[in-house]
Image 1 (cartoon, rainbow, N blue to C red):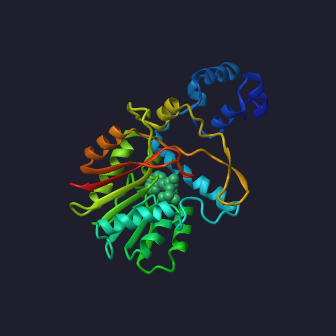
Image 2: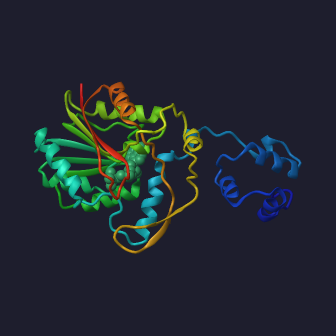
Image 3: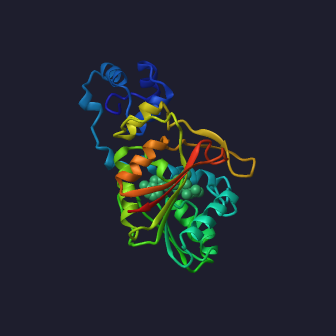
Length: 297
Ligand SMILES: C[S@@+](CC[C@H](N)C(=O)[O-])C[C@H]1O[C@@H](n2cnc3c(N)ncnc32)[C@H](O)[C@@H]1O
């Protein structure tokens, strides 16, 4: 376009490209072949002159989307966006889990810890806590939130591609597993969780997105998931943040619901034994969710 002295608006009008497609082009994201063909016809060039194939892993992984969300809601003045340390259902579930598995004084790893609310709850229950999350803004918030608890720590980690230094006595995940949409990422993550635990140790996956009619087929890439789910993750979703009346345009984040049988099959494929699968009531965090209690074989 620079060579031909063509402005962005001129190309858009001449080829008839929608606003959303133009945004995708600017972000080096996938668009329909017919759009590329129209651009080639207009510019009188070939595909190779305007596109390049870049393997997905070279770009930021889709599950980094939460960083964007955290930045927007924190910039809007929100103190805590995810679970609060005073969430009654969460406190009750964790209190029972800690008591049932005698985890007082034991080392617990939380994957996808977000802003560290569970670190506060588990520290108050006298557990030794380490939380990990891929989003730098969340890790920063969690470190601040946990500053007053000497047995709690937090660090940045991609739970799909990196392992923690274990072994831990128990593992926890709250609405983190469902952010992984490809079969491969999900399996790699569960294998990492299993590998971080002592033999026979419990793990709790709390409030994971669950639906009886969830798509049951394979998902090999995020692009495939976008086609299957029909969701456009580019269009910001206006949402009220927290208790305040502030409404912010925040991007949708990837999430993949599963049905009960598929959750159980995934757990078993990663060498977990499923002890309990509990359907949760509709709540402000997730309209259809389940908590899965497992232990390492
Ligand atoms: C729905 S939020 C839940 C946060 C927190 N557990 C809570 O309940 O408030 C999902 C979290 O998963 C984190 N996440 C997604 N993919 C991840 C990955 N590959 N490694 C580590 N954290 C990840 C996101 O950054 C985000 O903080």
